[in-house]
Image 1 (cartoon, rainbow, N blue to C red):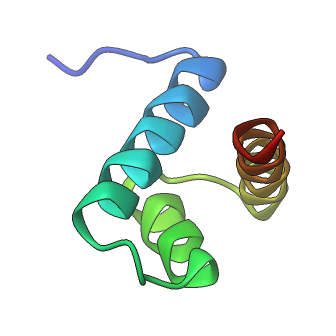
Image 2: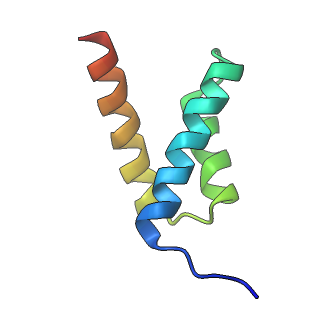
Image 3: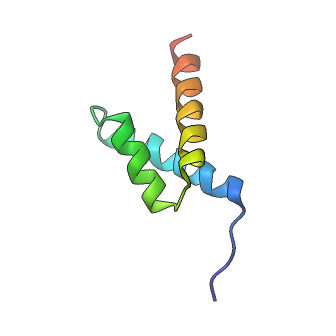
Length: 64
């Protein structure tokens, strides 16, 4: 039986997926990673935009 996952959990898992993929392939394009995560975790375009903002925040914090 399939379980229903909370929406926020999907976004968190997608973020973790992107971070892991960046470690494996540092040169991979961010847009490609977002598309891949969106398809893998069934995210809406709005969710993908939120995920992109989270990634930008992570990058800004890492550079600070």
